[in-house]
Length: 577
Image 1 (cartoon, helix red, strand yellow):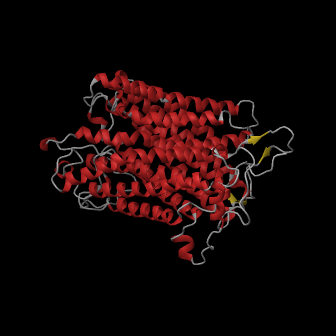
Image 2 (cartoon, rainbow, N blue to C red; image 1 turned 180 degrees about the horizontal axis):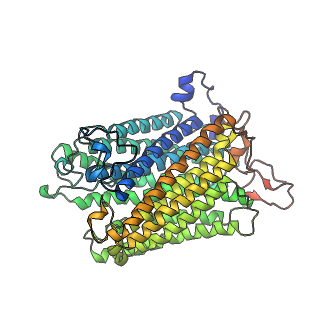
Image 3 (cartoon, rainbow, N blue to C red; image 1 turned 30 degrees about the horizontal axis):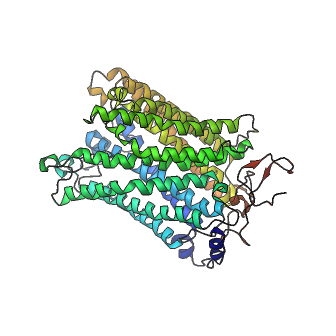
């Protein structure tokens, strides 16, 4: 069936000739992938800027933020450049929302999924190109709405990125009139966008694989995107319903979450985290797929345990639906329920530990090449292991009572997401940049960028674990008002300086990215020596991906060092001897 579908799709429509159809309202999966990348990178800059602002507040409270002292004293937002508690809450809320929903998902799942699925499975385009185009423009609309929420009466949403009622359910609690409503609307549209994308991410690899591409010949990157899409599709429904309930509470006087009307604020927590924990793996699995591809390519070695890795990740995906209440151990949850959620939370680390050891086995006694993508892959893997180990503490209900709502939880969360979103995202961009744009990014500046990003992350978040264990709580705009935290305040200053350095190093990436578009070394079809089908197309691929017939698959992916074969590797389309 997949061969028949591929043959039918081979008769692809002609390449668009107008600027608008080619670059704006494009149905070509490769252009849509680039649009997702640029949306994600824009929001990454905004989210990083917000982090710089609230970190300044934590380090030097009541001091004008450098670069924002020009704001008039008559302004409602940050008079004289000072932040204060109300603006601090808005900055924290929008930073979390932007980084999780408007950076992580577009950068890894949407962009890489769009670019790689047709190329890796041997298809001319996605199964539903127009739906694909609609998905990116719905995300662009959501982005405009979220951006507008900064400038409406009362300011941006300030109820935390998780939007817990009753703070988010009553206008009187925050003074925010439109900000939270626009925030909810932007999230609803963003979810709708990824529902559209998820349909393509499932239908295309299952129905449009080229001849010879069986399920267990698909690259692991495709498996990770498929599993992530399934997790998103199955988990997002309750949160969409909760968002509708919250809008009704705010605007029509209902009481789904308001206690005075008979509602239950904890209902939102259950709906949010039932989605929120699978969402962690929706973000991480594509990054894991990137690491698997890159580590295999740059170690010149077949991935150890291809099928067991797939089974392990499927197991983790199932478990991700029964761990959500570990976020609610101190919310009044019955202690008899805490124990089973602790067990499932700790148990979910087992399949990921297997994947980590599979990667280590792949690296063992291999011919490692330390190009920039490999640095980011190994760095991302190490930070993920670090974050996973700190997560085990949070899985214990007894320990969580002490560390919940401290900066230890913030540090753990950023360890898991930073390894995926940024180290995994940069790894993907450096690795597939030659295929996307036909040129290779500068290796020297790529390694400088990695060093600054990796060491900058450690300088920020390792001390954050320590001050969290020391009791420093999150969601407080000025720790100097509390005698308990004054001895820890120098660490806040250190972390802020380190965060600023980390932010500045991202400009190295931006300059390298833009400069390489015009002056980067030209890339051939296969600059890294990869074995999967995307490396059989020109760089960048033309409309329809292959100038001639779609190649037929004869081999499994990651065939390195095959006896009786001349050369280091065997491409998937190379006929078997």
